Amino acid sequence: MSKTITKTFKSHDALSNVREDLIATGIEQEQIYVDKDKNQVKVIIPADAEPEILEIMNRHQPID
Image (cartoon, rainbow, N blue to C red; front, top):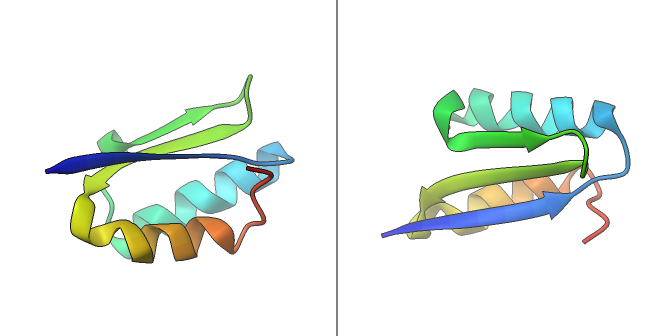
């Protein structure tokens, strides 16, 4: 079962860094959505990958 995780960040640099880290972890680019207008990154992942993805995203200090 898939799950979508969404986090909002303070800057566009953080968006890029999160995206790069997720790709380096093995997440397919097609599963990562960057919304520069809202400063959000959304990732569609298998539910069992949630802890690892949250850890990666939280490294970049999301604001929500």
